[in-house]
Structure formats: C-alpha cells, structure tokens
Amino acid sequence: MTERFVSWQSLRGGTEIPLVREGVPTFLGVPLARTPADLRGADVAVIGIPSGAQESPGRPPGQWALYGRAVADTRRFSLRYGGYLPELDLDAFEHLRVIDYGDAEIVPGDVPRSLDNVARKLGDALDAGCHLITLGGCVPYASYSVVGALARSTTGPVGVISLDAHGDCLQTLYGDPAGRELGAGTWQARMWEHFPNIDPTRHAEIGMRGPRNVREMVHTYRARGAQFIPMATVRSRGMLAVCAEAYPRVFAGSARTWFSLDMDVLDIGALPGWGDEAIGPTTWEVMEAIHEAGKAGIDALSFQFIAPDSAPAAAVACYGAVYLMAGWVLGRPAT
Image (cartoon, rainbow, N blue to C red; front, side, top):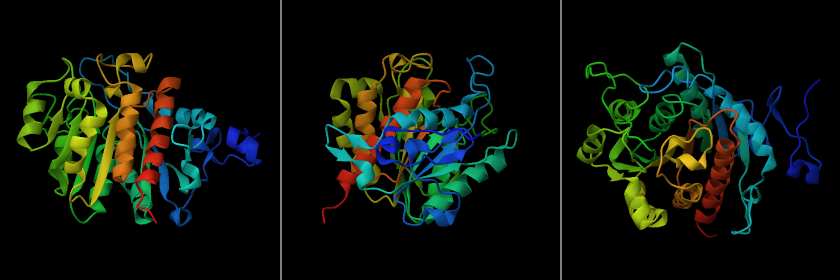
C-alpha cells in the first residue's frame, strides 16, 4: 500500500503530496517533474544528490557512508514547512513555481558516471531556465559536479560564494602533487583547473576557522585573487556587513553565480550529533548569507553533507531553501 503524506498546506488545500518514489515525498510538497518537459515554466528546480563519500583523513572509517540517505530524510522532514516567512509577510510559493525534479543517479563505485549523471540532471533544469537548489550529499558529487554543470552551460564567468569551515583548494591531500585527486579538500582546485570560466577572482570563501585547516589553503585563496574571509572576520564585523562587501565582487560581471554551503560551516552547537567545528556561524547568520545571495540574484544553492537521521540538519536545509526563495522574490526588479 502506498504511504500517504500530508503537510499543513495539503490539509488546508485538500491536495495530495506527490511522491518522488515510494516512501519519499517531494521537497516541501511541491509538484514533481519526471521529465525535462515537466520543467517548462518552472522558476526553481530542487534536485537531490544522494551521495556518500570516501574516507577522510582523521575521521572514523565509514563516517560518510550513509549520507546518501539524508536527501530522502530531508524531503520527509520538509513537509512540516511551507513558503511563508512572517517577518517578511511573504510566501515564496505565491511568487515562484517550484518543482522537485527528483534525484541524480549515484552509481556506487563509479565516480565518472555519477558525476556525469549529476551534471546531466542539472543541465535539464538549467536548459529550462530554472534556478537550482540541490540537496546533498557528499563531495565531489554535490559540489564539483554542480558548479561544473553551471560552468558548462554558461558563456561567461561564473562566480562562487562558499561557506565552509575548511578550505577545499589543495592540490592533493596525500602528499603527491601529481595525483591531483578530486575529492574532499581538493575539489575547488579541480574546479578552477577543469572549468576555466569559474573565475577565482569572483570567489568568496567565508567561514574558515580552526586547526583542521593548513596554511597552503589560505595562501592559495590569496594567490588566486579570491576573497578569503575567515570566521573571525565574520564575528567581528557581522555577516550582513561581510555580505555587503564580498558579494559585489562575486556578482559583478558574472554570467552565473553559485552558493556552496558545506553544513560543517555551522557552529558545532547548531547541529547536535553532527556539528563538526567550534566557533562557527549561527543558523541565523547562515540564513542571512543565503537570503542576501538570493536578493543579489544567485543562480543556484547547493547543500553539502546534510546528515542522515538529523532533524536539525534537515531543518537548516528547509529554512535555507525558503529564505533563498524569499530573497529571489525580493530581489526581482520592480514591475
């Protein structure tokens, strides 16, 4: 028997929640697109990237193995929310047509095929003229492949806003610069290397802190002309001030822009059971950064490392998506 899901919106409106597949409702209960043709006329496409990841130095083996489940967890959790924000008196769903386009296929053990699957799935939405929200999932599938899809579909420079506790711009994690692997800690280096229109001078790296980082990361950002804004600067100046200074350089002259949110940027206390690093931004500050990016016209937002079985992590993703959409509405030119 097919499980029936309900939300406040479906109960109030007498509507049915579409299913991505058995047991998994659409994100926020929005309509489902099964084919590229179903994306026509949509303003926003939500796409899941249900990927785990390889082991990472200094972490328990298998820590990331189940992170592919988090996309379905987040969709189920999202049904408690709608598109209305009381402090703005704005319901994003009254202004935007939002579609859930299901999941990109991640093939266990086949990295190239999985990366290609993500890029093709996102390409469908970009070809239809949609803004993107991706729910992930681990790197490089939920990061490198997303921004690569944007770069391949764009004529002109691509700007990047990255909120992360760690710098992912190393040439290698393992001491062999010739290895040039693609993964945790290195995907930004491969991004610049493989996609020439992703412009490091239009890159803002915000929120780095703590002793899991190494000097080479900071020096690389500065040498490439990126904006390096550590968490200490955010704390002393405030997130809104940081956004006001950093975002114009990301957006000026960029044909497309992308917001990369690694969940580990959040303070350890913000995500019980998953929080990774101390002295980080609050959920409020992260929402400020997302909302301001939406108002500035960001083209895509990607969540990375949403933890499975984590209500706090799912809530951050849901809030982030709605505050982004509200920013898109408020940032539209007046008509």
